[in-house]
Image (cartoon, rainbow, N blue to C red):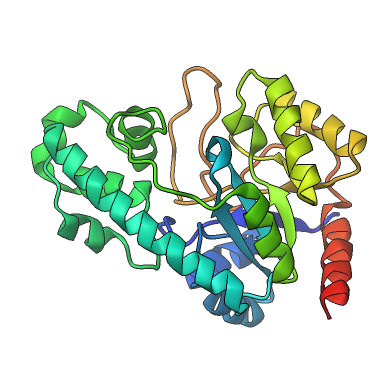
Length: 304
């Protein structure tokens, strides 16, 4: 039986609900042997996760998910040196930008009629990053908002209604370019992978492939083929692209919070309910960790 794995997980170091220790406990209990901690724009949870992984017999790949300028896309970095100076400097700048944007969104939400303060948001954020789930949880935590929420019960549902990239309440901060994000990951000895591509190119396969060609020119290493935000058709299309362009495949749950999450009415998809919660639609994933390991070793050797 192939070893279970999950290569995209967020913790309380960014916008997840569970600490790195809690995540590693879940992984052990679920029989997942390999995980990657990929918090948004921070490596603050990596050391804690690796220590917990050693204690629980679960391998932890040090990772990150960097938000980039183009199309609201994200680039995953695997096997990074999470103490590399240039990476840390770039993440500190990103942190400051996130903070400014989050404070403006608090003002926007208040103007839209929600009871929320910056203190409410800070109480929800125990890590290094303030993100949309913290804002959503802050709104949901205030009983004064119950009537206006009109049945919205989870942070995912709130974000989908009020804080998508297209929402007038959302503040789009300045991001690092995809080209520079990939260079930072490679400079830190890591392997770069495009996170949940279909999420940002829904019903636009031609645009997705064109953007992938740009990422390839900037030396991206792979594509996340299996993710809860991607349908069977998406996975099949992405699988074909990895073959066509000789790229790595990865798979991850994009896990943030344990529990039942509502289905999206249009796609029929839902956010991950626990670690390892992603469909592979009958495709084999047996070579994913082996090939990723090989790529990480080659990157570290080239860097040495």
